[in-house]
Structure formats: C-alpha cells, structure tokens
Length: 239
Image (cartoon, rainbow, N blue to C red):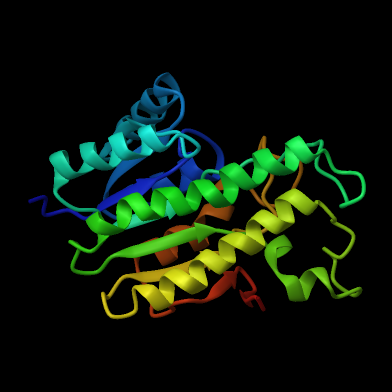
C-alpha cells in the first residue's frame, strides 16, 4: 500500500487541470493525470517530473465507460485505493447559446462530458475512495451553475446564458449534494469548487491565470472542513 496519498485529476493534461495536479503534487501527493490522449498525458507527466514531482498518466475518456472502467482497474492494481478525485474534465461549446438558439448537439456534448462524465467517473472511483482513510472529491463547478446567480439580474453572470454549459454545472452541483448525503457515513468529503474566471483555451478569455484558478480546487482536494458546499474564491456560492 502506498504511503503517499493518491490523487486522480481528470482532464489534467493542460489548463486548470494540469495546474491542480501540479499544486497537489507539490504537497507530496502522487498524482495520476487523466487524459483522453495518452500522448498529451505523457507530456504533462514529463512537465511535472521535470520539477521532481510524483506523477503518472492514465488514459481516461470521461465519455467512454470502458475507458473509465479500465482506469479504475489500473488504479486498483497499482495503488489499491484512491484518496482524492478531482472531476475537472469539462468542455465549452461555442454553438451553445440561450435556450431558443442553442445547438441541441452542442448541449448534448456539453452535458455528456461535464455532468454525465463526472457521474460515471465518480461511480467507478467511489469503491477505491472508500478504501482511503480520508477520501475527498472535488467537482470543478462554475458560478454559472448557480440557479440563484442565474436568476439575479444584478449578477455579472446574469447575461451569460449558455443553456448547455450552465445546466451542466447546475447538474454537477446536484451530484455534489447527492454524493455528500450518500457518502456521509464514509468519511468521504465532497465539494463543488468554482475556480473563478480563468483564462484557458476552453473559452479564450478571463481574468485569472490557470495557476491562480487552481489554488482553491487544490486546497479543497488536499484538506479543509467544508463538506457538501459550493465554494469560489470570494466564499460560498448559493446553489
């Protein structure tokens, strides 16, 4: 059994995911980089290894159940457990739009990755997290997933009407709420964390760097007393 904590970060070959993996690894955790493209995962591992960090790659497509099952089986063989799961993998589709205009195919793609993918990965990894003395799940959410914020005309996010993306993050928050209750007696902690308005190649614009955006998700992956909460850099976000 590994003495180090073991963390899986999905979609971790670039952007916020890679920076979360880096910051978790800097805290002495052995990080598994999950990525659809094995070549990109290996490149991310090389990046972290150059800093002397403990990282390995695993091929993981969150929209492919066979890929998820294979990743879970590999983690079980290699480590026997999982201590931290960061459901980071996510997409934004520029064909997404307000409800009357959005491409239905785009809405379906976004929900499939951002929500159903996180459910599928969580379902596969919970048995491994149950073997941890202090398991933790962090779901990468967004203020756009808050029903309260979406309904507030004074909110800076009020005009950001992307039915697929916003709904996917609202659904992800429901996953956090229900997993928290389901796992309450296990010691596994589950939170939704919004990194803030980060500039990545997901959207191409933002006010925070990926390194800055990774801080809060990494912090809650590593510890903290919050459980079943929706958090962002400014504090708690209403559901």
